[in-house]
Length: 299
Image (cartoon, rainbow, N blue to C red; front, side):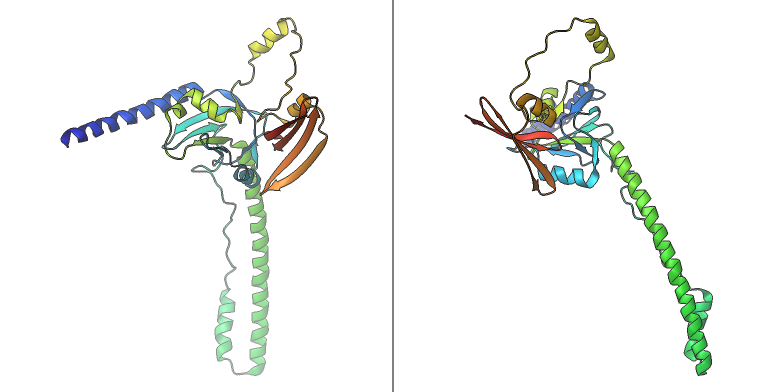
């Protein structure tokens, strides 16, 4: 029994440094590099959840809800910097341009505290005197004065509510703008535990391949070299569809669609475009201008 416990303790002690070393290696490889997004990213620290081991890695209705609720902080086709990699027990955080608004210290509520206007000392005294007053004429005069004081207080409350509404609207607009400027993240999740390949650069790239292009933008030196080099002939255009391609890319590759329709999946607007060609028909579904599914039918 003692030997078994020593073996277990040794395995625990060696596994913790391995995870730390894996995170450090991922940070060294990814952080500071730029990528190009194939999908729009919501302006929240919740980001986009991807389950690489599931048949459907991305829950599109939930993804659409976050876009609707928090807006788009990084648009499809835009370049973003990888600002942080964090390894958790069952997922890896792949943070972009700050990781998303809403982390600790970020203001997420637009509520502005307010209260009712308190009664004046005169109103309080009149209410007490009214209970003791016996003269009908005097009592009527006191009631009229009380009504005037109450109306003044109600008008003050109305002004306060209007000012609070304006302040909340301004605060909400500020928070929304900060969400748009705060970046986003991918959460690469697994149901049970992180497999070994999830802690490698190749595993991260494979998990996000449909949603991220890791080639990054060309450097200024690349532009200079391209300008000085002879212009090669145009490559043959890509004829087949692929997940993650933009709608404009699909139109360029497949031609003008013969039919277009829209439908709702929860809060998600799915655009279906049908293309025809010599080899058959392609039915492609787009969300936020990005191809998510397609089917091909041969002639």
